[in-house]
Length: 139
Picture 1 (cartoon, helix red, strand yellow):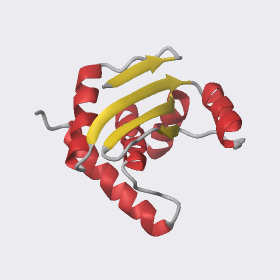
Picture 2 (cartoon, rainbow, N blue to C red; picture 1 turned 30 degrees about the vertical axis):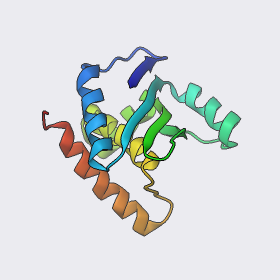
Picture 3 (cartoon, rainbow, N blue to C red; picture 1 turned 30 degrees about the horizontal axis):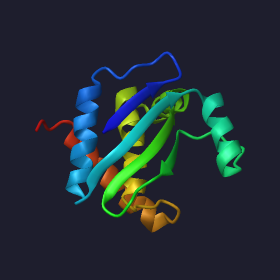
């Protein structure tokens, strides 16, 4: 089950489409959907979580909490809508495109992909691109 929560004045246009897409992403990696929760929030909200739970005093676009068990993918994703908008503007891309990248980025972390090293970042980016393409494919 995938749920969406909003702490800011923002709503996904079609939650079902996003849920279906994320489910297909997980299935494409041979895993089973557990419980995922997306919380869309402000920079300030996410900064407080970053400070409280991770000890980081920096802004970020997403924080992922992993509750996976074996093949079942479960976790919470906190996404700063402000940061996604700013990133999209800096990259000169549509907000929705950057939002999908951030949403799938969190899922990829749950699936075991990392982005700490340069070579891992390249793999992560390729996987993001591959999974974003799946958004445009209907079941």
